[in-house]
Length: 303
Image 1 (tube, rainbow, N blue to C red):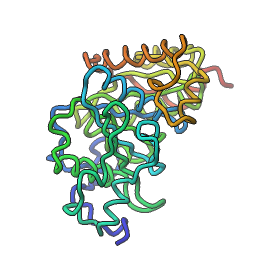
Image 2: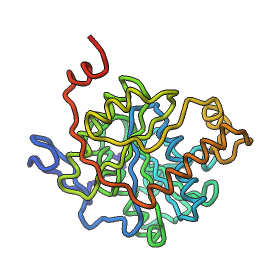
Image 3: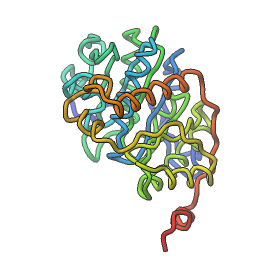
């Protein structure tokens, strides 16, 4: 059975201007909720280090004694690569093998234990140009609930692919308490961040999700990020510089908490632990006002 022909039983489509004026949104079944866990959705420009950030943040939460599930929401399905040391099968893969009969699946078919007990799930995605990312997210959450994997979970982290281009891949925002944006100190990252701010603002009209803040990544400085954040009403939650040890951790299929000790690595580990502790304690909700495209060019000094 082709994924595109699967009935989206838990998705409702509406042409009404709900989350965004004039938009056609994908809305999950309102009864499909995660439960008591604190839920974070990590967004940012493609290639900015969302998976590295998500995986190390998951480990940091686990080091604080929390039970964590990380859900990769990208057809590339490499979100949990450093946690599991391999590319694990996706939810869509195993559903296809079972001819889309979810009742035939076992927990071990789609959930894998990673470093320090972090549970790892790769949602995957529909074939290119077909289907909907919202369906994939919905099926993943539904399976986790049916197998009671969310009952005793403390933290759920959705690691979502690049820029928000449609309602389907904004679907994790319908489950999240806080959305986090990963950005580098450059124009393209900040342009993508502005669009993500717009998407979160749209979802916040009808869902509990609020913006938690921005995580500066792969950047020696943060002046451009801070300039944008100050202008729109954002806060920077953490800063991870462009260190070679971070690059090497991906090559070694390792989280930063498994790499050989060094002073610079210890500083990064402590920043992740601090970030996890602050997120667990609770961050104030933010309601930034996104900029028009021309305003971003003017703000960051382009002619």
